[in-house]
Image (cartoon, rainbow, N blue to C red; front, side):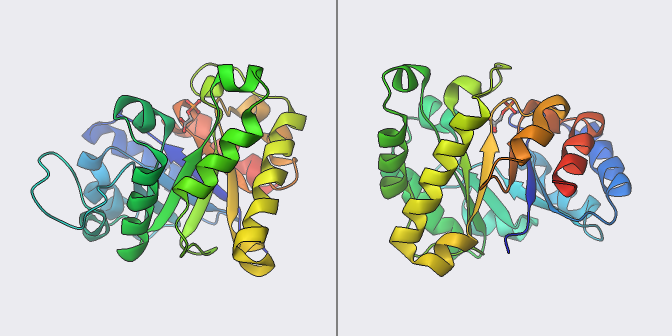
Amino acid sequence: MRRKLAAGNWKMNGISASLTELESLATVHANAGVDILICPPATLIHRAAETTKDTGIRIGGQDCHANAAGAHTGDIGAQMLKDAGATAVIVGHSERREDHDERNEDVRAKAKAAIDAGLTALICLGESLAQREAANTLDIIAGQMSGSIPDLATGENMVIAYEPIWAIGTGKVPTLEQIGEVHDFIRTRLERRFGEGVGRSIRLLYGGSVKPANAAEIFAVPNVDGALVGGASLKTADFSPIISALETS
Ligand code: PGA
């Protein structure tokens, strides 16, 4: 059985005052029936981990360097994230792929570094609007999977998020059939590559404009094990109903 996961990606949002959102989230979901992960900006990871330490909420990073340490000004290594209190890290988000020219092989190296440091790697995949309109979605996903996912993946050390780029922050969401098609495709390929046991144990999140209003129907799609939520994860008032929808799905 895969345990469901509600993950929040705060992106470049959040200062000290935002920690009160974590306090309220922890209070409202003190006995959550699902895993909850919040990925705040790196500057808040340590304090966020302290704030949530006796709660069910886990803290993650939004990126890590492929190397463990060294002369890489401004970058953060996976071990540093772990040391600050993170248990997971997002790698290969489309904003990183685009803004920082990250290619599949970079994402794979980052995911490997995360896993080597004892973190769960949350690997993001997803097609652009042009790729979807050209009916290339499944080819793109297949290429991202073989290029970005390291060989040592297991259900414990890796989570995959399917995030169509055109759905991120736009309010546009694929149809439930489209989400289901991609999630089934990813599951089948994971089973083929890692074997049935491991392939079935890896959690698949949907991400892109998940809101309280659409969460329940998305969570009812087979092979959707939770969500990676951007904008609606910033406030407990928005994220809490999404968590509740996942709990009852
Ligand atoms: P969104 O972002 O929920 O604001 O669309 C999702 C993401 O980028 O992870």
